[in-house]
Image (cartoon, helix red, strand yellow):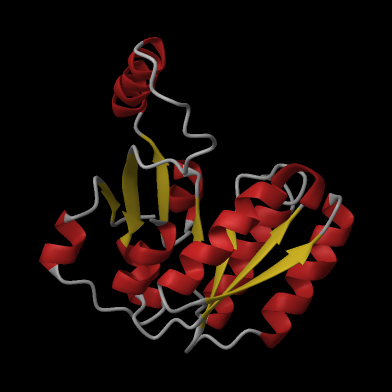
Length: 181
């Protein structure tokens, strides 16, 4: 869902950079590679096991990224995405270089990330109850599934700054829209 939203906002996107800790999020990156491919994107997944190596990776990514075709994903990985260090750097560099950055954290959108998908706890609860009932009814377990019960958030100020023209229909497709800093 992240990548389909990216393509709807930034149709020219071709490559997505993500910095992640493989000991915690290898499973997510495997799923993300398939999803990226299905959306016509190349996922460039760079490993970092701590904040210091993540900071170096972010520095390298921002130095080489092309704003016409690249985007950066801040994953839900606290070992590579830190509110006090990497997020401010990512936001500053993205703003200065007109790069789309997206996340899984609503606060990041308020601070300047282009968009985020966040859990819709009510829908998630209903989905989990359905899975529990299915399991009790003897249906086989499905294993790890990507989160589909989400709210979407968009920062219109950031979209305008990086040169995106977001029409009213597309903006209305988001649950939360920030238009002021």
